[in-house]
Amino acid sequence: VISVASGKVYLNGQPLAEDYIAEPPNQPYQPAKVPEDEFFVMGDNRNDSNDSRYWGFLPRKNVIGRATFRFWPLDRIGFI
Image 1 (cartoon, rainbow, N blue to C red):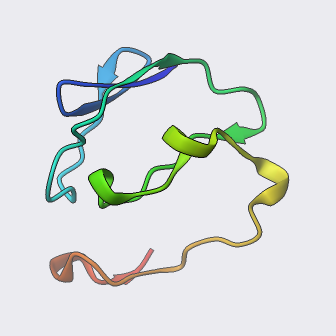
Image 2: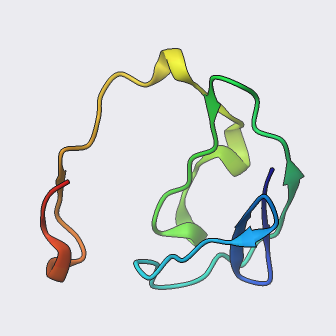
Image 3: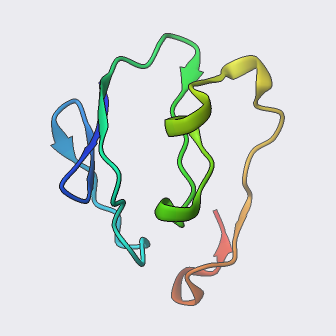
């Protein structure tokens, strides 16, 4: 179950540690169960991202790649 409240993202009732977020999300998202073989995705610019909060869950079949390199934050740049 995923939710957003009080500027934090919660997974199964536990807040996620998101030290890479410059600004916490300002829009709540009611608790929702993520269906099997689907993902809930959010951009790192939470207040300006058009993501699962607006267009729903992402089916696994629509994931066509995997991140291999991180550019930001600079102190964590490198291969993942």
